[in-house]
Length: 146
Image (cartoon, rainbow, N blue to C red; front, side, top):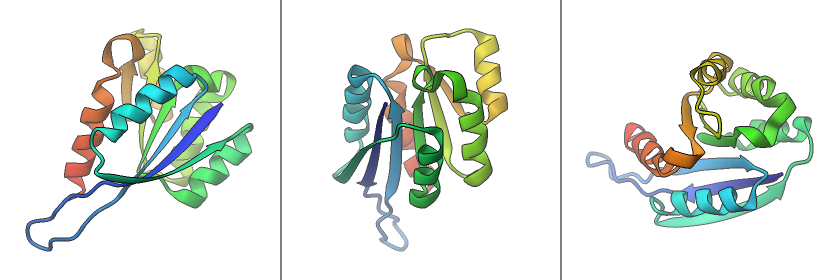
């Protein structure tokens, strides 16, 4: 499973205070193709970045990494967490409820979307038709934090 922590220096200027804000993005995916695509999509909105790439092989390490690094956004390819998907999302929201979770899936079924939202996922995106929405969502998170 690929887990990429992009500690991005997303520069946003607050007109009043002129402060720079940063956003941390964690991508959890076991598909190198999707992982690379997400990496490029998140690059579109970043001026400068520092990348930390690590491989997480079990549920406990994933949660510990999230607890220690406190990302602002987590992008999860639902297929990569097959048996533990809903439990993982619930656990993330328990330890860090403020984290935005974007779930990417190949199943555009409304029932599956509702299950993800009930578990704590904030956004549901069909990989086949909507993966480009990721950069739009992150851009909106960035502007909300201003």
